[in-house]
Every structure is written in structure tokens, then in C-alpha cells.
Image (cartoon, rainbow, N blue to C red; front, side):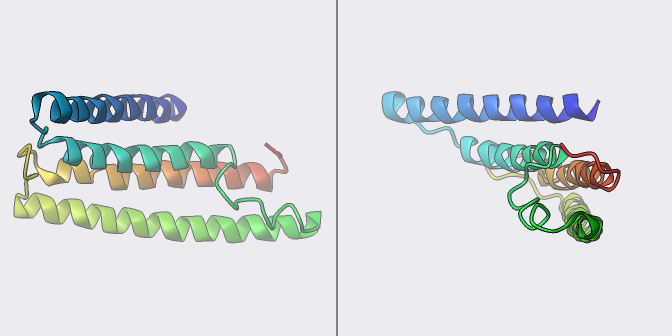
Length: 152
């Protein structure tokens, strides 16, 4: 189920970024009018797709540097590396989740809206806690598979 969610987020966000960016360029060059919402929407979609993509990569152990040292050490030391990786991932994702929730809460309380679209900022801000949760789940899955000795 999480696989489908990640894939859906990636497909929809990348497709929307493509449509909005190409449409904005066309509008600017041909009609001489820029879409004021294009930058806001593209930044939101970029953050969302980056975090979902990182989670998808973590699922398969494809994050950059994830196995660099792991592949070089003897088998007995590999479990220690996996534990260190899991602790670091929990820490990083925990911070990302904590500060993401704090940001969303702050935006909700202040009633901030985006300048061009007038959409509440907290809606866009939800992409950070959501991405942190996806990344946390995938890093934990990866580490559990490694601890069980399953090489992917």
C-alpha cells in the first residue's frame, strides 16, 4: 500500500510540475503573461516528490552512500553498521517530523496563505511531515531487512 502511495505521489507531482512549468514558459513567451502561482506550486511539488523519492530509494537501499562502508566491512561488523544507520535515520526523520509538525502548526495558527494562490500555507507544509513519515518507514524496513541478512 505504501508503495502505491509513493508511486502515486511521484507520478502526480512530477506530471503536475511538468505541466505547470511548460505551461508557464509557453504563457510567458507566447502570451507575455506569467502564471503567478507556478513558482509556489512547483516548489511544493518539488519538496513532496523529493521526500517521496527518497523514501522509495530507501526502500530498496538505493540512497547515496547507504552501503558505501557497509559493503567494505566484514559480516560481523555489518549489523553494527545497520544499527548505527537505523539510529541516525530515526534521529534525522524524527527531527524532520518534529520541525515539520511545528511548522505546520505555526502556519495554521497564524493563518498564513500563499501569496499568489491564497491557499493556506499549512496545506503545503504537510508535505514535510508526510515525507518524514514515509522516509522513516522505509529506512526502518531497509534496516530490518539488513538485520535479517536479506541483501537487496
